[in-house]
Image 1 (tube, rainbow, N blue to C red):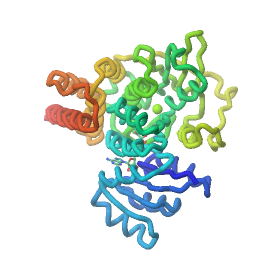
Image 2: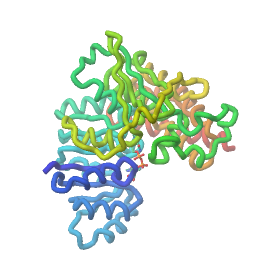
Image 3: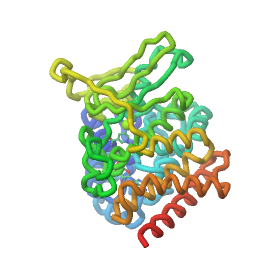
Length: 389
Ligand code: NAD
Ligand code: MG
């Protein structure tokens, strides 16, 4: 039996992971599941998979989870330390699917025990890429990408020498506003930004897809995970979301990864790697699809991409500042405090302010990352308050 843990089990990636594991009874022993406030769903998943431990990230949800699992013998815990403790329990495979920088500490804890970490939580690579990679190396652990583009790059690189890679291209659907005139973007509402043309995902990543902050995070993720230099990494707009990534080699050939816009493919690939096992996603009918289109992203329309390039050039803690400022600005947008376009300008201002104040040192430990994260969130919320006032 393979021992598995799912961090962020109640989210969009988490639920897809739970369903893949539930489809294969007798194969997995589920060590732990973690979730947030959706205690009813977490309890239902825990019962269905017969887990050892269920953890809610919120202390105030502890009693509700306890009573939902009363009489099952399933251990229950709550709070951020309990998440880390759950991740530390020996498992062969851990899905990291918490959203945001909150996924970093549990992800590091899972790596330190030496198993495989299936990484959906791109924010942890953006905040602390070198720390994550080094923790994995030191523990003899493996990180497998789950983000569809990065899974595509990883698949295209099987059997290849990374030294022969000339360029990596990741695709972007363009998000909810790809057909909107630029003048209208300032007025975009949360509801409008929360509906993705091709993918069904959590609300935060869906809004990040509309602003292209998701693609910005993914450029940095590509750099951190594959060790490819920033000038060799490109993003291209591909509205059909069927080609997820392409790797170009020095002989001029390119290997593209195609698949339906369904995360169960990338999750299943990471779950079964190095084997390929059947996954019940839709098969592409290329003749019916007819054509695939690509265009260059307009960096005036999508400042997030330009900011990602600056972050990669700066290195050190710039990624932690960028991600935290983005998370805070996104909270402000979701709460109706700032407009859609304010998110990028706030992130840009926070990066400039913290660089000026010397907050972007180059030593990357969990402590320095969390300190930079905290400083960036405070700076972003001050700017949000100013813009509201
Ligand atoms: P989601 O919002 O649907 O789920 C997030 C999960 O994290 C939930 O279980 C939630 O309870 C938990 N969580 C939220 N805040 C937490 C906190 N502070 N502490 C602990 N747990 C917390 O998100 P999602 O769309 O499933 O995305 C999860 C991760 O996967 C993100 O990093 C996202 O960028 C990445 N990702 C998602 C998709 C997708 O298709 N949804 C695709 C690629 C990458
Ligand atoms: Mg992606």
